[in-house]
Length: 114
Image (cartoon, rainbow, N blue to C red; front, side, top):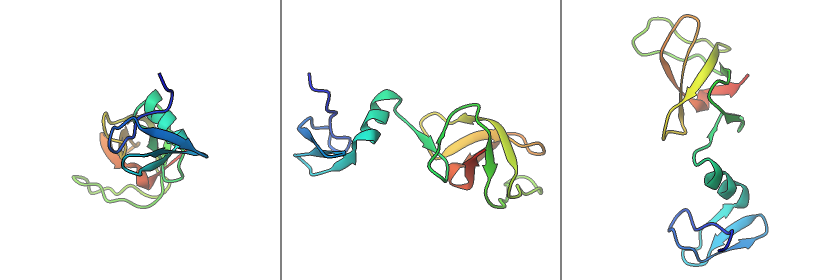
């Protein structure tokens, strides 16, 4: 069996390596070889605004002031969110708590790994 993965777009197995990428001969889709290895190993990869991989239990910092629905207290830039949890099936959100606000769901585009 070939170690070259099937195309993530069309699912066909008619793929070949081309430098640092894989190419699907059926639909023409190209993707980086590193992304294919990550997809095979763990499935979903959650990254912060700088591209760092986030894992459950990490500490992140808010990069801009955010309004919080249901609270009169905003999250200020530089607020530390400790012990984050990844949301199953969603690579754009994490769950966590700050010192003042508990039970937050935040988009990773507003966070950087501390």
